[in-house]
Image (cartoon, rainbow, N blue to C red):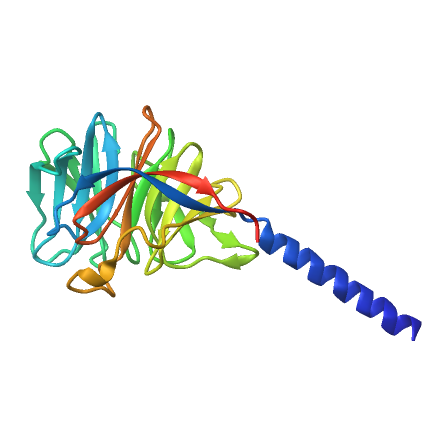
Length: 259
């Protein structure tokens, strides 16, 4: 009887510890600060903010582009059309260049940031989904729970981060953005953004954007989902949008009560 009781107590402690672990990841809602127009022809794959402008990459074969966009009006100021056989994916700026992935072609493009002229190509194994950066490294998602770390000079893989929440891998990591020391990642086909600690790979917060936009009003609701995060580091502004969405939202995060 004593041994059985001890086992029950151990199981109870483990259960309480697991429950505490699950409750430890905070969830954030949002407050809409401003709404900007967004081109509904843009199947958004990559997004970032730099020097007062948005840079956006769009997907779909025969319709993939790289764009420089005026934030306030949504007007496309500069555009490069990707060759029709490629499905454009994520982008990032580095040292005066703009780097773009493609989905399944295992081919990436490097353009001049100022003129969008192709400078060179590079290759990588597997799929390409999204890119972001910190001061020293580039991070890449491929749809799995693992973020690749790339050398900015060679674009070769030099490390990886396995992303977990409550000890379980988080898959379908898509569009990425570096925000104040964390990596924000859209979780494909959900209304959630994961806030990831790059040192540990642990999800340290969830952003729940349920209700931000009614995707049922779009042509393909199952695909025209939340995707696209941009951060204005100087102005501390967070922007989000989705594929074919007519709006781009500036939001503030609101921490929700613990459950």
